[in-house]
Amino acid sequence: MALPTLGARVLIGNKAATVRYVGPVDGQTGAWVGLEWDNAAHGKHSGCTGGRQYFTCASGAFAGTFVRAEKFLCAADFGVTFLEALRRRYQAGIGEQPRSGPSRVEATPAAQPHARRRDVGVEVVGAHAVCQRQGRLEALTSAGLQNARVAFVGPRGELAAAAPAIEELDLAGVPDGQLFGALRLLVLNRTGATWAQVLRLGPWLPALVELHACGNAIRSLAVDGLEEGSTGMLARLQALDLEDNALAEWAEVARLAPLTALTRLQLSGNRLAGVACSAQQPGSPAAFERLQVLLLGDNALSGWADVEAMAAFPALAEARLSGNPVLRSAPGGGRYEVIARLPMLRALNGAAVPPSERRDAELRYLRRVEGELAAAQGNLAASSAAAAAHPRLQALQARYGAMDGVAPPPSGRLPGSTLAAGLLELHLTCTAPGHGPRSVVKRVPSTLTLGRLKLLCERLFRLPAARQALWARGGGGGERALAGAPDRDLSFLGLQAGAEVVVSESDADAARSTEAAKWSAAPAAHEQRLLRQLQEAEQLQALQQPLARQQAAS
Image 1: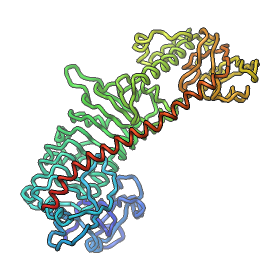
Image 2: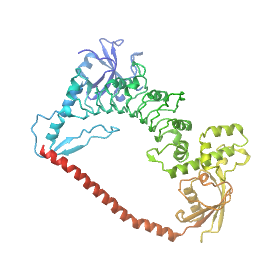
Image 3: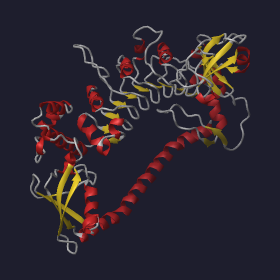
Image 4: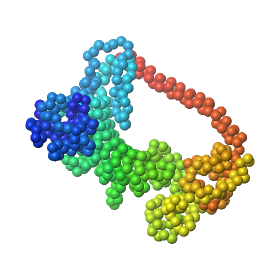
């Protein structure tokens, strides 16, 4: 058997590896094969031995090892052809006699959007008949070849003649697959494929609209060894999943701009440190002009400029930014600020953004920004920096007008320049019977939430937070109730230094009546949900009965 080529994928036992070097090793006799294991725990070095670097590991880990060529050839499994894998998976049991009763089989479902669902054992009635139908490869439209060791296309024309109708294919856990014209969805997760290898499949994938290539340690989206414009081979691609790779620069993502049909791009779990959209050239289309969903969770985005850069995608409606430093360091998780900075978002981090939440977020953001500008009055550099950091300020002011009650702090101090700059002096007065009258002056941070303010009043006046009704007086506004979500902070509520917060007891009877009404309505709502579930089950059973009769007849 001939020695393998560089980049070949191979199994040694049940351990997958990539061939990185073939040749002599100093101080040793004969030929050696350098391997990079998929699981770095099997490795011994990074491709360097005896002070000489023979190869480098793409993962950057100590995942390398050397094996004598003769030992390697005895143990190596280079995989099977695509057609052989299909026959093993779908025709293995055709020659057996059918057994009576249900058979237990291991499910091999067609590719799912994220290809992360585990196979489950199921009881199948008429399994032999199902195998007979699936064994007709010429009629097979969906194939699951997970971990099937596919490595070669086989003789020219053989696959197209044997299985011409396949539209969906799952190759998760196997080396690069060989495809054909009707394929619409391809999963290449955890195969070790590079982006250039994926692009080489382009000419055989004219109908592909969805591609998953997660967990392949892809660092670059360059078209190494291919002609410029090779990315355009996937011109019809609408959804691309590159999660859990090693992309670190947005310049690599920008290489995907030729994918003009792309509407969904999943990049969570990479190492991206920024989002940088290049300026649009006059007369040329915008980059990612059809992109509607951009998932960037668990990356390294650290600045709000990276968030605002996403506004350059004209069709963007959904984003994921959870797990990035910019949100981990933001008050309240930063959700309200993302919503305020990106006016086109309709969903963020998997949750819808209703109009009411958008309005609240934009008002809260506008109040905070105007407070920063007021604090910077008289300091031209600080005012310019604050205005530049909030490009949506003018649009929000045009929509909502200037926020009332925003006054500059004394001596022109910038917010956050010292601890005292973020503190408010409040006069807390309790008027509840048996708990007052009593007044206390407290200095609290402007980021204190309404819920925590009630807990503070509970400790001061021994009045449970659930029975408190809070009112504000003075401090730049008239008398007003302090109500709303408990996570709203004092700056959002418009409280300023010198304001008085009056703590009274709420109408306990009315509160109990409201709570009782809610609980009395709960059983009826539960019955309605059960009724809907029963109706859906009956509809599903009605749809399954013709299929069961057809299976029994066959």
